[in-house]
Length: 562
Image (cartoon, rainbow, N blue to C red; front, side, top):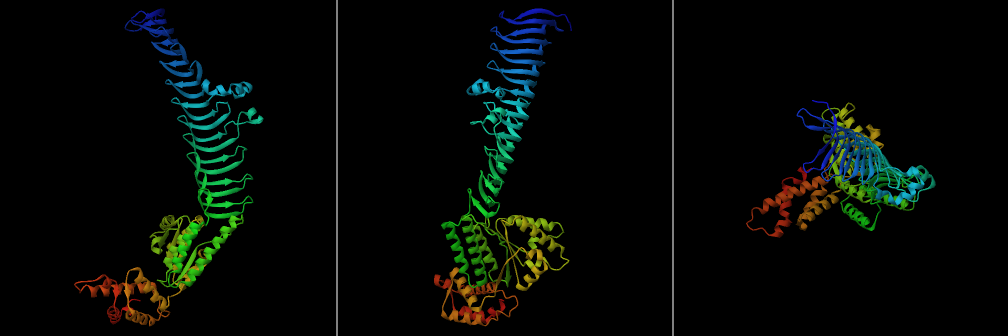
């Protein structure tokens, strides 16, 4: 290649000047730009003036578009690379580092004139407010990395992380300047509004929010610019007013409410910013459940205990209405008694009543036993318990035959299950109720063998065996609920047979289950009788006859169903 430089003019085919400046010949004998030169478009407008190497812009130069300067700075192989100034409408829009034609590295981005026009006087009066739109790191033409962003007035808006032009990552957001104080004018910064994490210009993740006066108002989880998730709200004196779940900035879900002295006033459910109150609608739902409970045969101890709990919770709610502290208690229960005495039925009703009273968030019912909690290997049991607890969170976990968790002192699996349950009772003490159930004597031994477990329970309900009259009433209710009926003769035999049952002396008498089994056997006897007929009426399908019960007596039905 030749190195003979000369000053020369090169023209477009129509004779218009294309280039004026240094040239040299390439290996093919053609003129190429090399050295300082000026490039024009076909209308004669200036395109570029600066340095060329081998026909490419390289070194310092200035680019133009329609006669207006658009870039001034360094070039490498025709691309903006190095330090430079980018112009917009004749004004500097960006100054800083470039790579491959894009803003890349540290730089400063300026506002357009229209944006800052309303604040010209303020910026003139306070020169330190002549701030750019942004100063910080860029990657591929977009804000990425650490940086500061300013309001058009010149006050600091944000400082922290950026990703692809967005506030994203850790950062601090400051209030917009409305009636700034003298100190704020001097500092050029209004009070901190938020510090924490951002995603696409919105508060998202852990963060803290402050009042215009600089007082911490809330901290916790944010989502799409609003507090959503677990968080804490504060009084002006710095005392927490609420700790719990929030949705779109409002208390919603489980939480604790405190007075300004730090005393807990209410612990329970919140909806749309308000604690759950016993409204007339909720009162009607509770009354329905109470009637359902009272409609069950027998169970005087269970009915009394639950009525006591309902009254206690209602009075605590009234105390909160008057700004008084509500007394926290544990709502876990021990049910003791023989099978079939209604323990599971009552537990289901309790879950729904607790939900309406705000004790539980959902009130659903999960039933399990040793097999559902204990795994085959040490270490797996804790995971199994955690899985069951997660299903029961917000409701009632009913553990039947709980005494089987401790078969003996060497039962490592049962001990692991109990230890895991104790941890769950502590971690979810505000939104999980555990009811343990089983035979009276065995439950007493179980609780005595595990003081840690017993200390979590202070409500004990004994489910006595049903009397023979109550067993008859249960049978009558089963018939009514399943569209069966019977006459006086059938009733006479049924009562006579039930009165012969030594309810208190039969070991582990199955109570209601005994009656349900009896009912099912009588339905089978009636079905075998009716199937012999050619024509069967609706009334016959519904009726137990004296013949049915006499056949049952002959087959020792009342003795074999225990």
